[in-house]
Length: 115
Image (cartoon, rainbow, N blue to C red; front, side, top):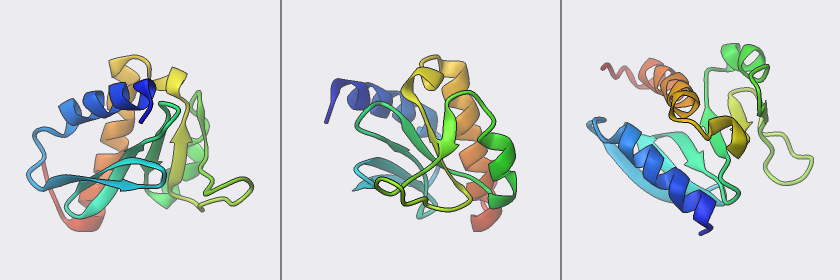
């Protein structure tokens, strides 16, 4: 793991600490955080973030600074609902918390979870 990825993992751990059913797994070339057995976020090697969001919010969310359609390898788009956020766009806690909340909104909607 890279230094940037390790730093992001620690910041994400702080955000998910209050979630009742959480675990970490290696996937998508990073460290993914699962809540209610669904992936919410993944810390990527470059310190960027892979975020699982509602497909109907995809277009609005990719308009945010540093957010792009996620790819699974060069030129292979993952489809609506998968967004990659550049490391510099989540360097402050406020922006990271924004993406965490967006991912958790989707997670709660598909798992019936609440907060």
